[in-house]
Amino acid sequence: MKLRINWDALGIGTSVACAIHCALLPLFLTSLPLFGVNIIHNTFFEVGMIVLAFFIGSYSLYHGFKKHHHSLLPLLVFFTGFTFLVLKQFFARFETWLLIPAVLLIISAHLINYKSCRVHNHAHRDDCSH
Image 1 (cartoon, rainbow, N blue to C red):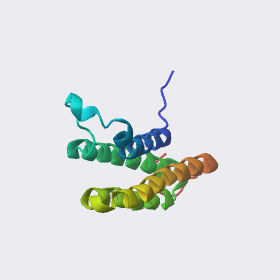
Image 2: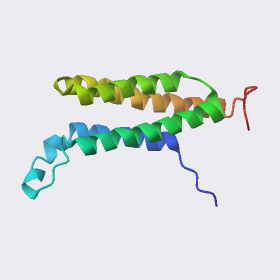
Image 3: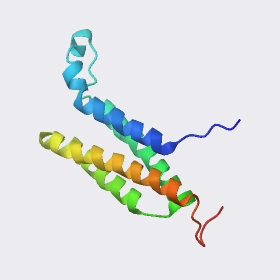
């Protein structure tokens, strides 16, 4: 039995986890500093989540591009959203205004990729290596 990972689902899950962390964690877990735990606005945690989302999302979308649909649209939408996500780290004053389009674009990229992979089901080009 071969284990198959749905990279789009994992990418969407990572994006949703990031959105939950950024939006809901401050509301529900404001008591964590009382216990010595501070992951809210922790730079290392934030950067770690961004790096994790970048690697999983990039691999997922590259796999869909190379093996299935050969469309750059999901990659362009993903990197546009990721630009907003990175800018959020540098412009904390506009965090919410940058986070909302970032998450929507990243999740949209995975949904576009998922649908494109299912529609084309291995649309081959001359440069395909499989």
